[in-house]
Image 1: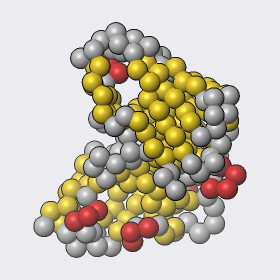
Image 2: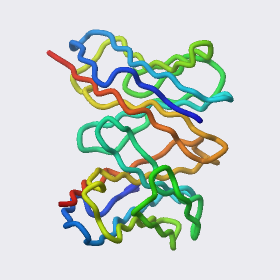
Image 3: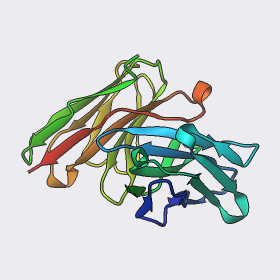
Length: 113
Length: 114
């Protein structure tokens, strides 16, 4: 069965520091991978997605993610974190055969001044 | 465009009461979904619909029913609420033909069952 693992429940970084959020997936075929962000009290918003091609994908708000097939990973990165990036981040994989998206449990990002 | 809207935003129910959550989207999306979000568990799919008049069970369907009589609306019903249904409920919509499985989410409904 498909699954998505986000090993870190929460992460704290200083404003201006770099960020990497980890995501590992289990999926037999080439996956469609996503990162969503959820600000407090809001719904989820798409940050970026990977379908095929270049394994480094750029998203909104200065985020990027790299697909590594050999490691079954799709880690999210940002070179310099802003206080407004404090939110919960969800990695997701699409089950293209079943029309369903599988979400990870989420990583909550705290940003300290 | 309003995108995806959910009604109500908050609700408190007593055990055994019933209620309906309404989701509406104005993007002409084919697919619609209901999720529940609980701490440490991410989003879990309750029911989904791939078109008007069709619905299907997701990962955690027990205790919920849905209907999609109109393409733009997806209703989630709780016939007899239980404390285990205390959660935040999110609706989402998607058009896989034009937007490649990206889902658009509503702002959520926070439900408390006492």
